[in-house]
Length: 112
Length: 108
Image (cartoon, rainbow over all chains, first blue to last red; front, side, top):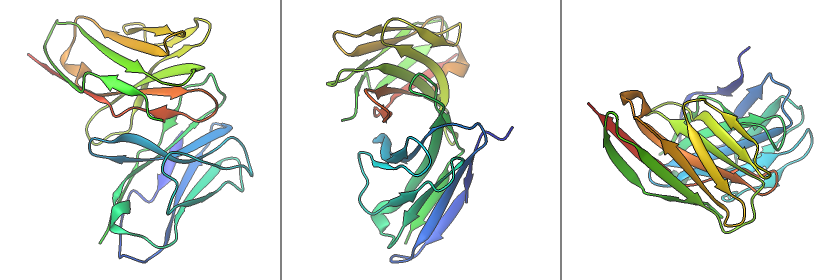
């Protein structure tokens, strides 16, 4: 049982490049979340999904897009990367409103 | 809106106690507590639900005041392994919003 897996673990992008981060969970969870973590800012919610085919904006959605075409996968896209998007990105999932969140191991993204 | 955690940092000697507080301006359905070690992912500690139900680790206790939208995490007889950053997460619906964290350092 792998839990929540993020791909890739590290990435360096040039300003203006695009990329997609993949989050995959094998626990059949309904809810999935993307967070970014910056020093002193805690975990800030970017986008989230409450089921296949649904997405919603979080606290800091600008510059990101998401898709949830399959229940087990939640993709985070950066269309035109900016240095301000340098961060550690965490994906999390949980099975219901009363459930605990399980986190992936994170993706460290640097935009130069 | 992010919940507000206090204090920002705590320094303890082994065996000492600490309390970490979390407050929200929104009516809450649940409060979550997680601990993150440096370079690792956050790990679940406890969830407190509206109505009084709690789920989590046996050695950690917490409270949830639904009327005030406040929660406190109680760390007693601290151990070196308790060091890390503690986050509270609040859910008023399906979104799970985290605070900025409280850094706990335990020394021998």
